[in-house]
Image 1 (cartoon, rainbow, N blue to C red):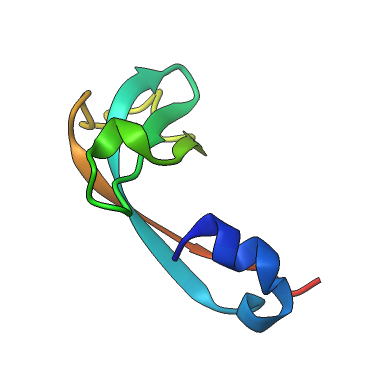
Image 2 (cartoon, rainbow, N blue to C red; image 1 turned 90 degrees about the horizontal axis):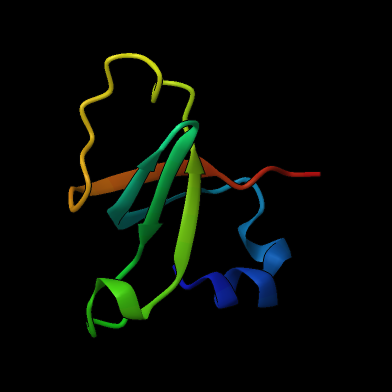
Length: 77
């Protein structure tokens, strides 16, 4: 889902599960800096994401340039 779609129709998506494919650009101390390729023009031309992950300090085996799937739930407030 395009993030602009979510912000435009936020009420429509509350309570739903979402996922996005991302390429890892940088493994950082407390998370990952990633990019999406939602328009097919390449990983570094779309949205940038910062993914907080408390597993980074453990034996997390994610490296730069890995393609990952990030899942989440849009909370109902």
